Image (cartoon, rainbow, N blue to C red):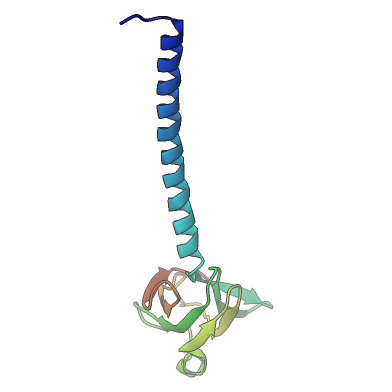
Length: 141
């Protein structure tokens, strides 16, 4: 078999074509993973909480949804006990039927000199991605 310049160029072109096909396949897989991840994120709510100060002594716990989906059946629990919020205020507001994106709800906080600085709070909700989401946040006064 005779090897000439045309054969060498054809071989190199074949190798480059195979490499380009392999790279394109890898990029398509990465794009597919990214699209799948974005689609899943569009179905998720992401709740958070922090204390806010209103006036000189009034404090409230603000719970908000920064996710892209609506949180449904939002519930709140206090793993280390509740010494700051009145049960009546909690019962009036929770379980919360829905919490839209960028929507929030506030609980009045009764803070005094002996109040702990950090309060673990478990937020529980449903969204389009799952019926049971849970997050523990640690807002500080």
